[in-house]
Length: 143
Length: 315
Image (tube, rainbow over all chains, first blue to last red; front, side, top):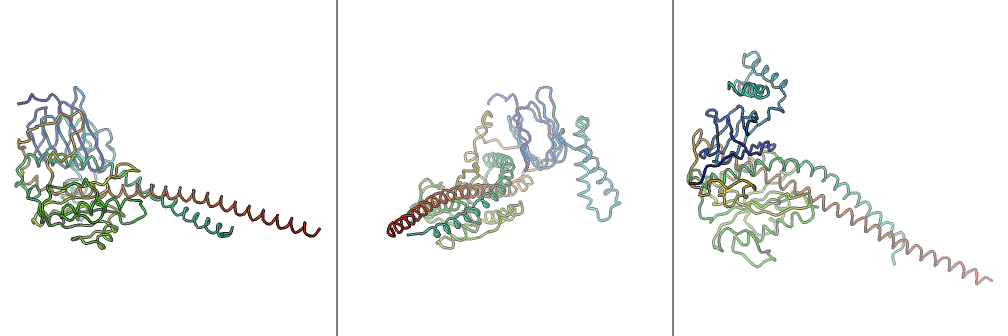
């Protein structure tokens, strides 16, 4: 048995760009079946991703991203995230996210005729996550 | 002997050709920039996807999913991708030469044409392989019409605007073919975009999903994980659902990437070719102008001589 690795190489890519390629100590991911915490030496795992926030930590430095769909491969010393959508907390436009939340709520309350309920719900989830991630407070208290 | 007027006509015609090639170069440069942005953005995702899936293919049993199943390669499909248009230097010729020698290798045909060595041949010289060709791009279609190879499917006009929808259709067709066991393996022959002035002809397997040994090496600095590669994953939600979502998507992403590679490479090749053509036209104009001036001078000298000797005779 080889010794346990001390760190994780984290790569996050979306179809549009590569967002992260770093060595980190810990990763928390929004798996489709619930939040997943990954430390070095994790057993190999393959999971789809839901909508949520992703946190990674190097030393005391934590960073957050909003993530939606895709999948992740976890290996003892490597985590590869292939997300459909991913956005760093710093680059999220809060105002837009808030407006998107309002629009989605409006539609869910049934005030707009011909609403696709599923789509509105997804839009709402995405907006909420983006706001949480952008404000940096949400991720400690997952909704 | 050509006179000055002939030269003038000649120069004018070369100049107008030069204008066209220069315009084409500009157009290609603009298109190239867009195509280049797209392929550079698409690559990391596609590469990572291939990496993850190769690692997966190495770990799980090939019978877990139809797209992983490895069979003796008796029936092959080769996908040849060229451009729809010409005037891009040796872009299409390179692909077609390489495709021909590769196909001849596979089919056990040898000898016609100077086939370049070094084709990636899957396995030894086994006879009785059934090879089919899928063709993308008008230039490949025209070439295969003139040559005797079993073409299954033809696709043209995708390069004007490469979309995920194209890739999805293409991937769907290939997946279908492979799952129904009509072919045992699918290979791609295409031009990879290396840089603006460089393209590389690549032959690589698409299906079954290649195992790690074929995959690009892990980036420098990362230690290879789980070298024995026998450990299976934990799956969330479950294996079937995951594979069902992942494997077809992988094929689509790879198809998309390959189309983008070829499109970017084509524009790069055309830009270089048109740049050369513009420069050659310039050189040609210079040398024609020089010759024209020489002749003009000679005829002036001759006329002066005639006048002078005429005046001389009158005295």
